[in-house]
Length: 275
Image 1: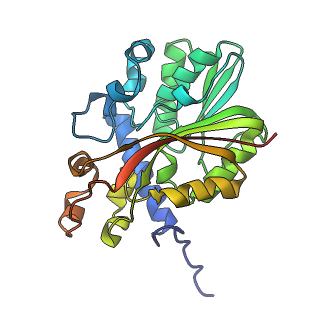
Image 2 (image 1 turned 45 degrees about the horizontal axis):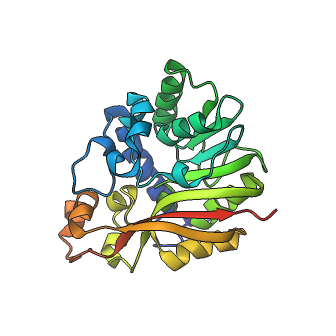
């Protein structure tokens, strides 16, 4: 009997199992070593002081900030209200779950989804130690969200959907778990133009939120195909080559990728599920 062919990522021809393995290993290391964007230097793609108000940062558990790796603040565009149910795709150490939990109050529920057991364990511990009774964390892939259909008032995500080898499936799942009239609020990495082919196959750069990103029209197209309406790019920040340098492996840079300025940007995008 012939061996079943491995499924390729529809975006880059990279095997999905390899992508998931590389991403899981990267964020396992982040969870165990406590490396964070919040403590990084200026020439990076993320940094908490740049994307969260100081008052919000001061209100957060230090342990959650120690493993933050976002590129935006989706809670700022999510229109959160008391009593809502919020689902965070790729919740990591829980920084956006905890922010959402404060905004929705004790009668609301904030649910974080992450595929890395070490992140879930860490986030659960932080929630317990800091009294977040309206926050919970579930182990699972964002392509198969462990949440019942029509549960969430809002789905958020922060620099994670770009990591998935199947973005269409992620948006279909986000659409499924939202209630009719529910809102999607996402911060993510998108491309302004195509990356060099060699960089597309660099799993290190993929797990660092570069190689797996889609061109804007493809990203927004995946949202439309899932059924979302009212899609709006709230804002964008274009990265310089210097900011990207920490996220592209030295091996990759040695392949002659050239200047990557004006190639990669972070977007904050909102959309709705029809009523």
